[in-house]
Amino acid sequence: MADEPLVLGIETSCDETGVGIVRGTTLLADAVASSVDTHARFGGVVPEIASRAHLEAMVPTIERALKEAGVSGRDLDGISVTAGPGLAGALLVGVSAAKAYAYALNKPLYGVNHLASHICVDQLEHGPLPEPTMALLVSGGHSSLLLAPDITNDVRPLGATIDDAAGEAFDKIARVLHLGFPGGPVIDRLAKEGDPKAIAFPRGLSGSRDPAYDFSFSGLKTSVARWIEAKRAAGEEVPVRDVAASFQEAVVDVLTRKAVRACKDEGVDHLMIGGGVAANSRLRALAQERCERAGIRLRVPRPGLCTDNGAMVAALGAEMVARNRPASDLELSADSSLPVTETHVPGSAHAHAHTHDHVHEISKDNLYS
Image 1: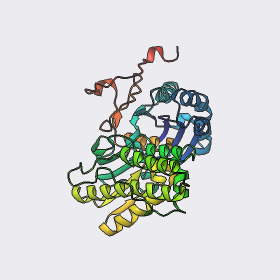
Image 2: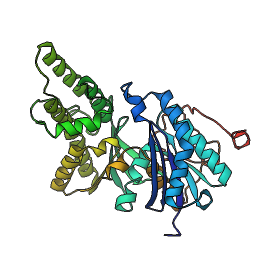
Image 3: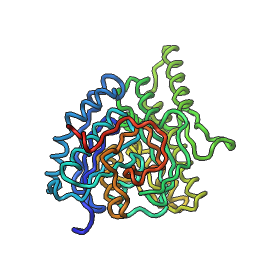
Image 4: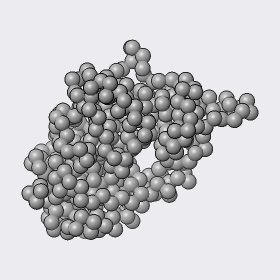
């Protein structure tokens, strides 16, 4: 274990300031400072508030992670950071902090992809990822089916959401039901007391002529909202628990059905589910049921590793070090639209064609000068 890479990871793509430390595939520390309570009164994440919260939490969270792991910065073999995708301003804070620590400690820097990190975190719980890995990533910003022959440099998108992501739909329906923000946990809780068959809500993109692996939850969201509005207009009480259960069932039915189909079509005998919505109890239960029926092994990290965290970034960074992938340099940019096919951003000597607008450029010569 002492020979395995010791890596610190920083995650600031949205509203969680996450700092994790891993040695190989062993988690040593997972420190998170969340600003979700601050955003709750606005009904969603406010980018400027998230960025300020990251700035204030960064140093204390890094210090807490180092203390928890029982290591110092000098012991590290590398520092990894989410370079994208995510909120531009939030990413800037994490990338700038990672550069500063890498520069000050003279450690290699790895700018990694947020979505690939969500896949790689499963190594911390269930051991090395099979190759290839089939992954269903479900969060507030993403609903994706990905095939990863090599998590460090070969991730292939099979399908994605064409409108609202699953987590976004949960938040919007919770808002219509006056349940607060974030919507996922409260809908999950109320759904356990409701009837998932009470209301026949639509299953988006489930027809024979629809894209096999793409997702759409906008129509479902609209259907649920109109159903609720009709009840209220008629002066009838809205059965909140039944609505929550029926809506949730419509979401997880489509997600699990398409994921199992992708495994069968690609000849992959396992499925990994990650992202914040992977903490949903019904998604986990239905995925387990359908995977067992199809002879597919299901891998889902514990809920705390499904939501955004620094451990997942450290896990991918450690894999980059272990496989001798090229480090990033101090001109690393935060890229709010970094595609999942770019699992990490190598240094300029290894740079490849990428036309997305980078939101931040900084050189070693002027770093914090």
